[in-house]
Amino acid sequence: MAKLILNSYAAERNGAFVSVALCIGEDKSPLPRREVEIKRAADAEKAFADYCADLAATGKPAVATMRIGKGDRSPPGFKVLNGARGFHEVNC
Image 1 (cartoon, helix red, strand yellow):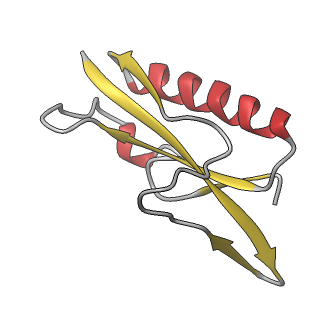
Image 2 (cartoon, helix red, strand yellow):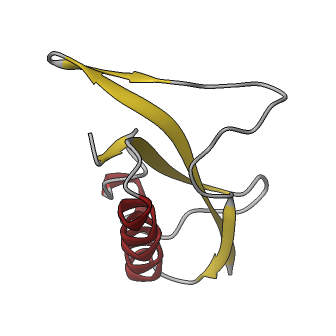
Image 3 (cartoon, one colour):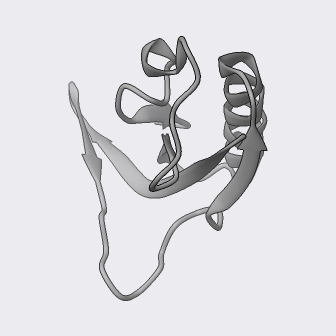
């Protein structure tokens, strides 16, 4: 089993671009970091969809991302999922 780490960051839209606030030290993320144990890419996809739904419920503009914990191997198909390729916009 691999550990999936879900993060969110505050964001705002500037025309065609999305500005992401990456803060070191002070945590201003709309939702706290969430860790989930997964076996398959489908488990990661469902956990990410649930996290994005919770993030959308806050009403704050944000981006969400997911990654595999250090030392764990990603399941087949993980790298092509939406949140694994970069930031996923929510409420932007």
